[in-house]
Length: 307
Image (cartoon, rainbow, N blue to C red; front, side, top):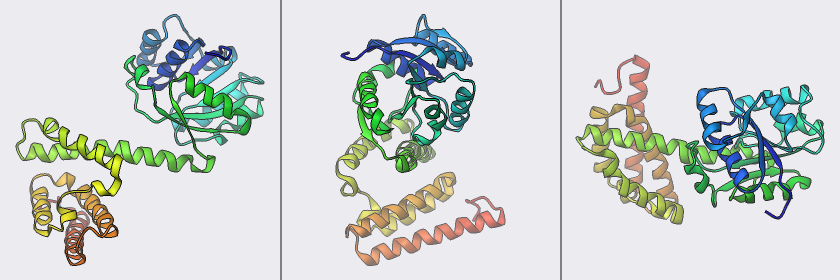
């Protein structure tokens, strides 16, 4: 590390905070204190930051040059305001948060107290264990900072082993929505697919899906819409109809997302010119029929599979 070591404090030493602090410690910085209340947080501090004191947030903030705020999004505004009102933030201190949604506006009380501010969001999921330390290598961090803090924010990401990607303040929420849509909703999709396979009698739904999902994900990341395969792109109306009938009968809890994603897939296939218009129209009508049937069930209070 070619730049001076910082005294680091972390407020919210959960899965993210404890790991980032441990990585900064490994890079040569001194972690002076961490704030956490739950048993799980205290265990993480003990495991990942041995010897680091657990202290109140105000004490942590007063003791450090670099303050990491790794609290949940909805708590961030209150935490910053409380620390500023208590006089715990000081001139020249670097105050950063790891929220994907928030940018610099939420840190304004810290800036008003004379601190430098930045938003650094790691685009990865965390287990809160030492396994995450190696996974940080090459991780993209969504950064937002003022002109005076850009260099120090990039140095911080480099010390964490990551790669910087600058996100304009006004685009933070959209940036975060893209990540959530791709990762959080993927979990729902995969879980529902496993439920359908289990209903079909699969002994190992996860093992059955894994090779297909890995290939589909790799191809989608590399080729976008060109990676689309399956009955929608082929215009196979009969297969889509059969899918919907069997899902309705055996796994009705997955039907709404199947219809919604089939509709989105159809739209992309039409835009790419990969499906004959007449077949696209028939699939569209079929999806409409099943959407209307589900809406009718909801309005009458009948379960979706009660035909």
